[in-house]
Amino acid sequence: SADKKQLLSENDQSILHLAARENNLHLIKFLLLSLDNYINVRNDLINHKTKDKWKALHTAARDSSFEVFEFIYLKGKNI
Image (cartoon, rainbow, N blue to C red):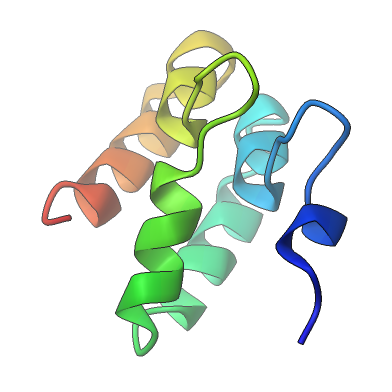
């Protein structure tokens, strides 16, 4: 399996952080919905923090539409 560090940006941002920064709801939905059968992986992705301790939800609140923020929030609220 791939080393987790290989899947992160230089600042430890995950693909979910990057998609939130770019306001890419289609990619966010694809990622999170495709992981519905892999709850632990999905939850790890939602809860992953950057070096600055930001989750993708924080990035979405700063950089994305409410729709992106809401989708990530609703997918993560049962964690």
